[in-house]
Length: 55
Image (cartoon, rainbow, N blue to C red; front, side, top):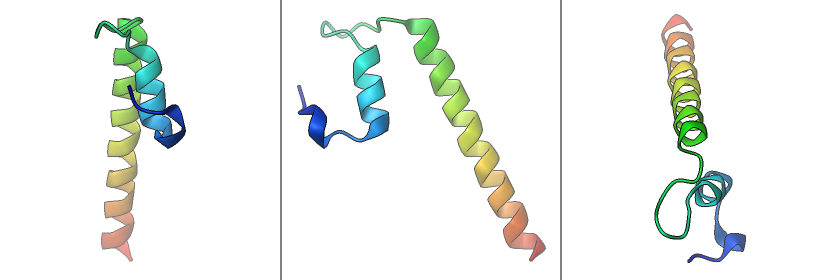
């Protein structure tokens, strides 16, 4: 197990969602968080590309 001091925020939240036996404690919340995070990343990328090409 990694030291929690050296983990970044995303690793820490994912480590909290995972049980020590390797299972996910809250699979629905884990999946929802993953899809929200991916959606935000894609949205930021699209906005960034649009701004880049429009300028």
